[in-house]
Image (cartoon, rainbow, N blue to C red):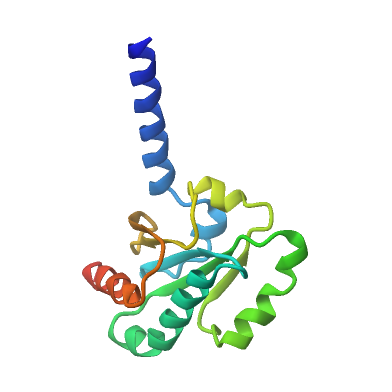
Length: 151
């Protein structure tokens, strides 16, 4: 029984690692050639998510000049709420971001996202190189440092 448990745990880790290295096509197709990206999973009701995306938005123009990268904000709001996402993002000034809707949470499951916000950094080839859950003010600076390491 212990061997079976160990084998299942090893398989779960391997599947998790593989899932994180390969982006679903819906995300991979949004990457700009030669640019790393920040992929943020968020929802309208997640205050830390909104704070993080606001902080990224405030810094994005200056950071982009120093080190070009893409921000993809994936809303996991359900079909009923997702109709508000685009106008909400526009109202927040997130016009530099690519906003994706994931009302059935297929991307969320594919990327093994359990808590909000969850942020991934992918390199210019689309490989996940960093993952972070939660948000604390100033955490956006750490994300930018990780992006600069990829240049």
